[in-house]
Length: 208
Image (spheres, rainbow, N blue to C red):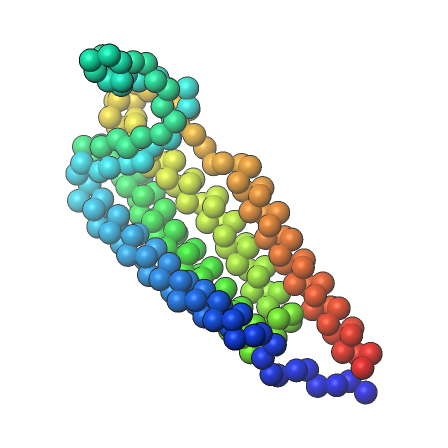
């Protein structure tokens, strides 16, 4: 005979308080992401003097770091350029990057809050929770790949526009592949852990 699944909370008051703190923090992060993206889109919408964060590779510049403020050669890994305007494709890429960032953050926070709610009700391992964890991992991976991709389009467009297409667009970094691999590994590991936990729990309940 299979015993009914537990419905009472399995977390201590301290654990529950920690989870509710996570809920509040998650909501705050989601609001911040939306406000940030809306503000960046509003600032860039007129397409005048657009500030663009730009990564660089093997790019040297002069900085007043020597004695008496004399110029010293440095290697840039990143900076902010102000483009008088952006090409239409780059401007739309900026809008897409900001929109995608907000959507990904809000989606991941929502999925994790649903997971937290389930755990607070005393159900840690279930097919629903496994789906929530796996989906959150996939959405995070999409954001980690998609947002930098469109941001690179913006940076490349800004550099091409400022330099009148005399600067090699290859000087701008592409997506950070090691980070993507790390996110994919963590997402896969978390999904597997919840799937195995759910299966073991169902097997155990079937023996009772």
